[in-house]
Image 1 (tube, rainbow, N blue to C red):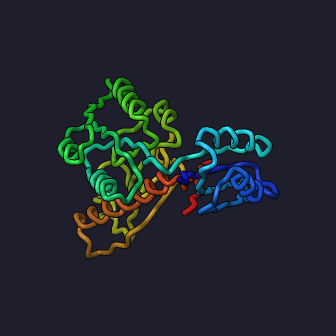
Image 2 (cartoon, rainbow, N blue to C red):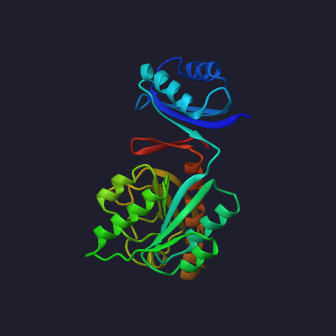
Image 3 (cartoon, one colour):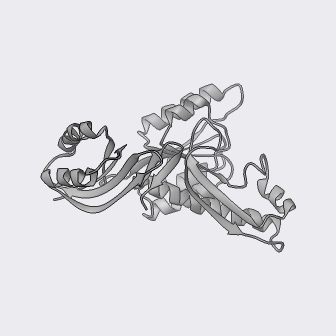
Length: 282
């Protein structure tokens, strides 16, 4: 029985990389099922994602062969088996639209996740978590307890072996240390009207200013607040007939869709970091 894998890699661009990767997989009994590559002329970097089937070598043997193959190319690479879903921890506060949407998509088989836990600084969604049979961890956060709370959060994330942490409207600013610990595996969602409408009730502020477009941005979490590499964005047109309540509902729907798309691409290993930007093989 063939085992399916996804290989992602980046390295300095040079001639013959695609030929070399294809030849390596052929030599090791691999059959390519999907492949995409990108040459960034600004940075001189090459990016590639290959999905392939292979029954000639075990996962461990493939990794050992890849380690030797990558050296002359100065290649950064990752090999993923497609046989297991991505272990995920979701963090949320009091807005549950993104959480509810992700849980439904997960249980419906629309995203390749394995939701291991939900972490919240409020108790609002413990019943929702229970309805999906997901452990719910209530960890209150105050200025005085922030360090201890984040230590407990990271303990849960590591204990669950989480490859992905989703901030599904988790309304606490993460410390620099926690951001570094979660680098490349934490995705946040926010309305994309920043920096114009900061703070509480951004859709109320937008309504007062008569905006014509509202949107959402999903990005990787970094120590620079809301400035991490962008994965997905979308907008919804609005006009003078939209009440502030309708504006808020439409904004939440956009946030849910954008976050779900970003999570899906990440779970399928389609997103690669390119400095402050991302390369996405859709």
